[in-house]
Image (cartoon, rainbow, N blue to C red):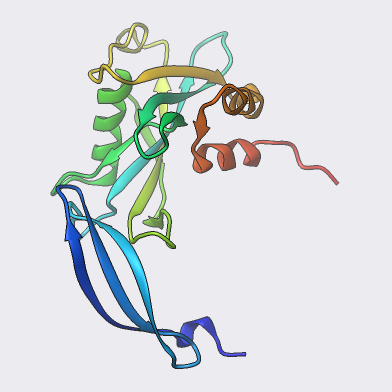
Length: 197
């Protein structure tokens, strides 16, 4: 059997372009040498030196309270329903993923935070497009006065705080009530579960 690494890019043509996305047709050869076509969506806002976006894994820590994960609920037209997601957003020109994460978290939730970890650029949905994301883990000091009554700048987003230990059950509850849960959030919740033998 031929290795997947034997596939080769041949060319790419833009079919349609909007403000934020373009539809492209990619010609490539599969591992057997057969020429094939693939339709692909690309962001028109891509910066050359960074990921397209950041996803923010925000943990709210407060004295004498359970640690909570900060999530956002928002309507997503392609899904035709509200979604449960990590706060996230596009990386602006010249912006580091750390700066983008702190900015987006503040805009979407009103919280300020310190960055704890940044992943390398990760593929987002490689069968659909070339969008990349960097996941940025941040810690919110809930005892800091500026984080005790945060005010978001985005009016169409609802911020929810979920105790980390209850995350999987709460996501299941959201799914049962008609929300679409982002696969990254659900995968994160699964990773928090105790190992079973």
